[in-house]
Structures are given as structure tokens and as C-alpha cells.
Image 1: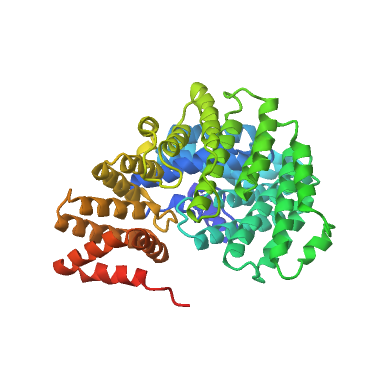
Image 2 (image 1 turned 90 degrees about the vertical axis):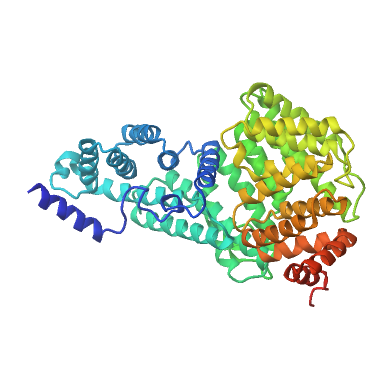
Length: 559
């Protein structure tokens, strides 16, 4: 009888429109990784850290916690995963995903009795077995669609936090999947889900449409397809502005201002601007209202500061960080405000460096580095962490090199301090898996004249980088260091030629080909005499393929 019942349940599940739990979802997290194990773990841990920093505390808190449990399981922290899923089951006994996930964990731990209990409870909640009506009373019919809706919404939430997305196309596909799941959840929960809970879903959906619109805007600002994403995001934001949550309202106002600014890049004003009552609304007014709404909450101000930093509105972002620190100056509690402000100072300085290289402005203000260092010092005194050591190392690197000629040493003690900070960062669990640490270490050693050591760091950085990465600067730095060793005669011609050949091939497999060509073009432009000498040596050695590639980069681009 038991076997027949289980078979009936399996048949019913096959016919269902949704299946509770996260471990069957088409997430890269659930599949066999294409990258090596330590890099997969790195990406999963970084994604989990990001999720923990912005974990939902309102209606979607169980979506966040279920996903944290999934990350814990895939990171081989089975006990932590069990505790997370069990706590959700205790606090929200009707959470379908938590029961399914907990049963999955017990099954993998070979605790069959407990796994069976979870399956039994899940089948009762879903109405797959007779008798649950008596157990739940008259609320059964009301609760089932609500549970299904929340189950689907949690699946949607998880899709947006997937790992291993190597291209914008992959990212867009995940976001579209998540939006579709939210739409399905809204259909299931029609008339059952509270207005406030729906607004939390609307907020997440709006951010997804905004990101999709941003991807299209970068490719073709006038694309007609943008209208779908733009209009839907405005309609959703209008609903979020009715939320009881001041944080949701503040962030929605900020995103509204962002979208109204983007409207100028679309040939015809999207109809949603008028439908939602935003005709003639100044984006600056939206930003002002967002800040006003959040002015008493330092943690919401921190979220706003990050958005403004992302938008490139650095002065506004600094001002918001200052507001948050005026309310809560303790670096132990409000370290995010200090961290964000330091990142903004670093960004302002590096933006100034880019302008100098293009001949558009004078030397950037080095006081920005002093300010960033002061903020990071406060954090390191109370809660040191990998990312803060990395940021501090970057600040010290820029303090140690010339603003115009980056390879020119101006303060060796600052570079030594940078290397010490990077060494401390590498003591953390993920420290030896971050390519940016190896890149900056290499640049420090390059400026100190330790070309051989710099080459090894750049190689490690390329190995650690993701396939499809946009950060191809490491490849350029490596080739420049190999050129220096070649010209200085510190290594044999044969070794340098082989190294160049190997790492050009490696770069072509790691980065987009246009990025590789762009970096080679920059190297040829800035180091022409060295490139010509290396090319002659390659011709003598019969390595004509690399010479041909270098010649192609030196030719004017076709118009």
C-alpha cells in the first residue's frame, strides 16, 4: 500500500507545474562545474557573501535563507545547510522549498527516516495525500495556492543569484527565467498573496528589468526591445512606491530617477512615463526624495550610496556615505559606509588617471588616496577582511607609482606596504583565488623592477580569471614584462618567444578575441621598438604566426 501511494505521488509530481526545492532547478550551481573545483568554490563563496550582505529581512527573507542553505550544501557545509532549512521549517511550517531542501540534505546524509518525514510533510502541505483537509481545516484550499506562489517566487529569487554566468547572454537568460517564475507566482497567488509581499516581488522584478534594459542600452541605446523592459520596470516601481517599507520606497525612487534619465536615450518617450504619471518629472527630484526617505536609516543610506556609486554619481554617493556616518560613525557597526566611501575615492582617482592618459586633464588629486587610506585604516582596526586588505593594497600601490607614468616608482615604501597587505589578503580562504590580487602584486613588482616575479604573478592572474572576462589588462602587463626581460637580456630569446606564444594562445582562450587584439594594439603602439626587435627574433625562429598577429594589430582598423 505504501509503495502504491508513493508511486501515485511521483505520478502527480510529474504532472505538476512546479516542483518544490532548489536542487532540481536548472542552476549552474546544481550542475557539474566546467571550471576547476577551487574556482567553482570561490565563485560560490563570493556569491554567498554578496547574498549575506544584502539578505532580505522582509517578505523574501525565507527566499534568501533557502538560497543560503543551498550555497552551504554545495560548499560541503551540510550541517549548516541542515540548520538553515530546519530553522525555516520551524519559523514558516508551510514553506515547501524548505521541506524539500531539508529532505534532500537528509537523503544525501543517508538519514532515510528523517528524509521520509520531510517527504511526508511536503505531500501533506501540497495536498498530495488524503486527510490533510482535516489537518488544516477550512484553510487548506486557501493555503495551497499561496504556498505554491511563494515556492515559485523563491525559485525566481534563486535564479538571479546563480554562478558561472560567463556572458551577458547567460546573465540575461537567467534574469528572463526569474521574471517568468515571478509572473507565474503572481498567477498562482492571485488574491492570496498580501499586497506588501507582492510589492517585495515587484521590487526584485523591477531590478531585473532594469538590468536587462541596461544590457540592451550598452549594445544599442535606441533598440525597440528596450521599451518592453523599460515600461514594465516603471509600472513595477510605481507599485513599490506604495510599500510600507521605507527601504523599498527609497530604493524605488532612486531606480525611478535612473530610468527617467535613461528615457533620454530612447528616440520616443516610453508611454509608461505618461501612464505612470511621471511626465516632466526631474530625475534629480526622485534622487532627492530617495535620500529624504532614507535620511534616518544608515543601512538604507548605504544601499543608496552603492547605487549612486554604480551610476557614476560619485559626489552624491560620498554625500550619502557622510550622512550614514553622521548617524552611525562606529566602524565596527557601519563599516560598509567607510568601505563604500573608500571605493569611491579610489574610483575618482583611477578615473582621473584615465583622463590624464587621454590628455583630458591634469594629475588627479592624490589626497583622494589619503582619504581612502584613512577610511580603510578604521575598518582594519576593528574588522579586518580580505576585501579591505585588497583595497588597502590597491591604495598603497597608487601611492607608490607616478600618476602619469604608472611604471615609474615614486615611493618604494608604499609599494612594499601594498605587497604586505596583499600577502595578508592571501592568508584568507579565498585570497589565493582572486586574480585582482595577483594582478596588483605583479604591477607592484613590475614597478620595483622585479620583472621575473611580476611575470609569475601575471600568469597566475590569467589562470585564475574567468573565461570571457573583460579584465584583459593582465595579459598586456604580462607581455610588457616579457618584452622588458627580452630587451634587458635577462632571459634567452628562445624562452621569451615560447612564453609569448604560449600566453597569447592562453589569452585567446580566456578573453574575447577583440579584447586580446585591443591589448596587443596598445602594446605595439607604446612599445614599437621592442616589438620590432622581438618580431625579427621570431621570424628567425620561424614563429611567423605571432608575427602575423602583431602585424594585423598594427594595421589601421577597417572603416
